Image 1: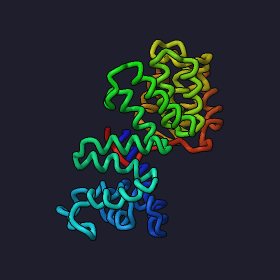
Image 2 (image 1 turned 30 degrees about the vertical axis):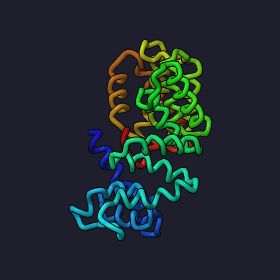
Image 3 (image 1 turned 120 degrees about the vertical axis):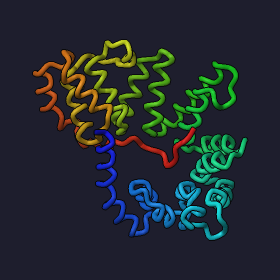
Image 4 (image 1 turned 45 degrees about the vertical axis):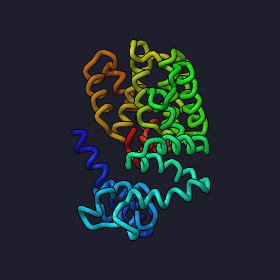
Length: 286
C-alpha cells in the first residue's frame, strides 16, 4: 500500500515538474529526474551545472553514453565545477563536495568540506555534521565534548529555521533527558511543516503517558491527535500514519466519539502553511 502511495505521489508531481523543467528550472530538472527515474533529465540538469545530477549520472557515461563534455567521469567533473565555487565561499558547493569526494573514496576531503559548509552557515551541513558527531563518526573520543558539539550544531540549524534540525534537536534533547525543551522543539518542527514532527504531535495527544513518548509534555487530547493523523494521511500519506490510524482505530485509546470529533476538527490541521514535507536532501548517504 505505501509503495503504491509513494508511486502515486511521484506520478502526480511529474506534470508540474515538467512545466518548470521545460521552462529551464534546474531544480525542477533534478527532481523530475528523481520522480521519473529519468537519466535524460539529470543529464540536462548536469549540463547546466546541477552538481547532484552529476552525482546521479556517475555510471551513465559508460552505460548510456551520457558523458560530460570534458571527459568520462561525472563526479570528477562535478568536483572540478564545485571546487572553485567552494573556495570562493559558495556554501552550496562546499556541501556538495562532501558526497562528491566521499563517492570517489577520498579520505579527509569529505569531512573537511562538510565542516567548512557548516561553519559557513549551511543548515543542511550543520544538521548532517551534527548527526555524524552524535553517532560517533566524526572523531570525538570524549563523549561530553562529542555531545556538546552535536547539540551546538543541531541548535544552530534549528534556530536558523531548518525543520529537520528542529526535529533532530527535539530527539537529541529527549535522549539527554530534557523533555520540556524537546517538546517545544517538536512543536516548532510541526509548525514548520515537518511530517514526522506533526505525527509525533498526534501520538503525544493520544498517548502522552506512554513510556516511549517521554517528550510529550502535554495533556491528553485523543480527538486532536486523531484529527492530526487524518490530516497527515490526507496531505502526506505514509506507512507510519496508516499504521497509526489502523492501530488507534481499533484500540480504546480513541473512542468512537473522539474519532467523530477528530473528523470534525481535521480541517483545522489540513493544508496549513507551510505545507507538510520531509525536507529531503538531494543526496542520500552517511
